[in-house]
Amino acid sequence: MMTLYSFGPGANSLKPLLALFEKGLDWNHRFVDPKKFEQHSDWFKKINPRGQVPALDHDGKIITESTVICEYLEDVFPDQVPLRPKDPYKAAQMRVWTKWVDEYFCWCVSTIGWHRVVKPLAQSMSDEDFEAHLKKIPIPEQQVKWRRAREGFPQDLLDEEMRKIGVSVRRLEETLSRREYLVENEYTLADICNFAIANGMQFGYPELVNEKDTPGLVAWIARINERPACREMFDKIKRENLRPKEDA
Ligand SMILES: N[C@@H](CCC(=O)N[C@@H](CS)C(=O)NCC(=O)O)C(=O)O
Image (tube, rainbow, N blue to C red; front, side):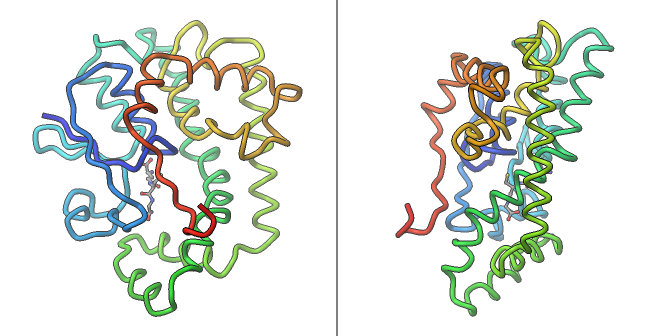
């Protein structure tokens, strides 16, 4: 019995969601509603004490960390649509890409996402509600991030994160202008984990991700979106809208 606790198909939640759809496994989905801050609720913190999604419950064993969950699924179900190369050198290349997403690419995109989405959400709360809510967040750094988002990130930080997004986009394009997928001839977790962050950038960052400047990246985003598993995922699991009501 497998249950994935996640937000909708975006960012870190998208990684195991897409891996599960690709593999066609039997599993349940429990949507954790970020608009109700369910990730910080007592019931969810019993599952992941860090108060973050995604988390996988497999026969009572809890696995956290999106990329680790994907690798776990690969270890337990290696033959159901393999998403990790059998060849050790290619598997290493795959892991260089997944490590890079987790250590670099996701962070710069995350800060800008928080600036655009979490800031208005946090500002829509009263001081009292906001302070009460902060107390429920278990990771001290996340408390700081919420507070900074509400106050407004300094412009030099936002500029630096945008610079890093530019670097990231060029790095992806450099490979995807030559290949269909990040690891040669194979659709792998490298694609899934990068797609989790890059999908939608053609709308959110059109000045950086577009047909003219990054044709390989744009084609790769479209190619993954066209995969039956990806279509099924977006069809069955809806993306939440975190914007405050008047902006929705
Ligand atoms: N390193 C973790 C990060 C998980 C993470 O940042 N999850 C976000 C959603 S993408 C979350 O739960 N945010 C809510 C919060 O921190 O309050 C992973 O890859 O799973």
